Length: 340
Image (cartoon, rainbow, N blue to C red):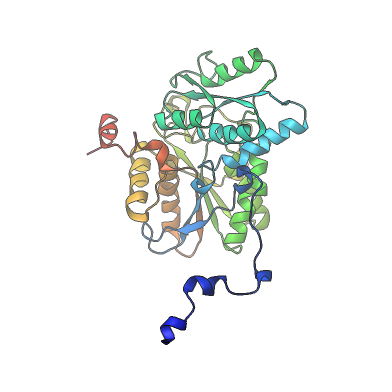
């Protein structure tokens, strides 16, 4: 018999060894799989290698918002604000709604997501796929307009018995979730070598919670808020606040969940630069991400280029699968005046 015939197969070799070296890794439910997303070096976009991305679209619900969804629900349960069989109502750009719908499916709650009409069809379909009811409202209205998605969500919460609105814009569980998960993960994954945190600012929960934790560990760390042109965070006057195409970031009001004192500086990015970087990430790094991710990377890249010795971590909030009919569609890009 030949030596090859007696040689154990690779599978046999892999299975060999004392069972004491193995341990079970089974989550009790899908929300237990949230977090511990990887850091990936963006070395093709920025060859010096000091720009790395926290890939949040690898959460089970597809976005960073999975982290806050369960935390907000559990806070409501503990305080008696949400009872068995109740209804969750949330104004959302889609991702928080998905995280809430995922948790609601496990816990047996009805979920109503109130979204603005600029959100992609994929996001609406995704919410419905998770069993959520979707209410679509106009984008270009003031927050206090009764047609705005904030106002509609508030009305539905009043009208529906046993309804609860987590309100990610004021819920302290939003930044707390990041202070207890995202921040510690980045610190551990970089072995404390992170020098700069760059985050697109939406509700402000991610940048506030993550930034506060990292600064508590390393006081000299710089926090950079990346903001779309038209958002209130970087507007010099009220006239500078206007609508934009990037979804899920920026605001036209100041959320309670955002602590501006955490931010050391801002980088402002327009729709064109954000979407060009979004498409470049897919083409060059093989990372299919959303427009807010392209925006965050465009801003973070400027910071990383200033000093190659500093390690810059940028958070990528969601997947590009939600934007196939928009950012990755050449016809749509041309219609918006952003294509060739």
